[in-house]
Amino acid sequence: MRDLGTEFEAERDHLTGVAYRMLGSRAEAEDAVQETWLRYAAALADPDARAGIRDLRAWLTTTTARICLDVLRSARVRREAYPGQWLPEPIVEALPGSPGPAGAGTSGLLGGFAPDPAERAARADEVGLALLLVLERLSPEQRVAFVLHDVFAVPFAQIATVLGTTPAAARQLAARGRRAVVEGSPRQPAGPAEHRRLLAAFLDAVETGDVQRLLAVLAPDVVFVGDGGGLFPTARNPVTGAEKAARLAVGLFRRANERTSRLRARLVLVNGTLGVQVAAEYRPGQPLRGVMWFVADAGRISGIYHQVNPAKLTRVPELGPDEGSWPVVR
Image 1 (cartoon, rainbow, N blue to C red):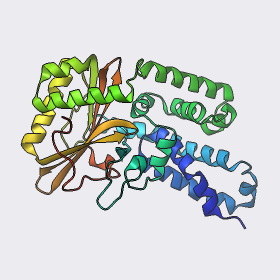
Image 2 (image 1 turned 120 degrees about the vertical axis):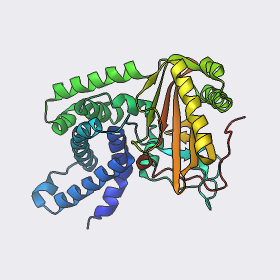
Image 3 (image 1 turned 90 degrees about the vertical axis):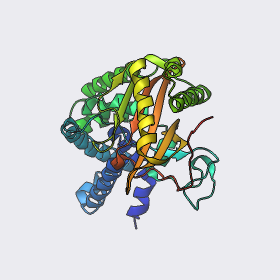
Image 4 (image 1 turned 135 degrees about the vertical axis):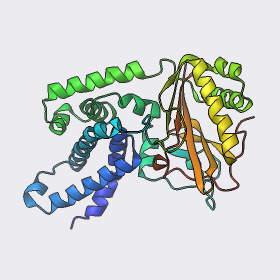
């Protein structure tokens, strides 16, 4: 007798990885996978539908992709009314060897806390936030075609059934998505050591309020993007240019020190890349949580991204009351 749960669970990480890359939201990805499970269970209850499931992974991937396509199309409308800039939901992990949440031991990359499916999927095939930001510029159809073909090697004939088009048209959509990804990706991305050096210099300059030192590590065309969801202060519109970005960064950290209490921070991995997690008391009884990550290109920081929308940080492990200190880097 078939064990539906076991069969489906064996594919959950894969499906979550597909959905997260398409949607940029862990919550929406998990909802899409749950909807796939419901459709799978319904199909197995129908003899005709069950007979059509010859390749389980292919069927589940196609079903998840169709659900994500519907979500992406509706998301276009929702994001037009979104307050300020929209950034993806980050996957935040402790640095290797650092402690996880209170009571957790130290274990490998995650430092003691058990990864959920989105985190496992991200580590198995790294989902950089820089890539997710580029994918946001694509049409829903281009994004689905690119992710399915270029990331998961799904044949164009199968992609065509998801999009309701021909294999040739699906190939074109993926090619357009690929060009956009190449054009929007760093030409000379920093390695881990250089990324850490740039981040340390950035944080040290921000802490001291030294705009000139910040300018030395920022690319002339750096962009600063913040997502506060209309609830917390950050850059409501993208700020472009080293001078403007430097003054904004210094101002945000200065206000955080002045208007919050017990500002705490720690270095973390944000979708596999070094970033910063911050926690403080914004108003009495209103905690402020934030994650900042960076894109480095040709030896300079070319992108600064600031996520403080609490709805997108619910899965981020909280800093304990005695965890983290400021300054982060010395």
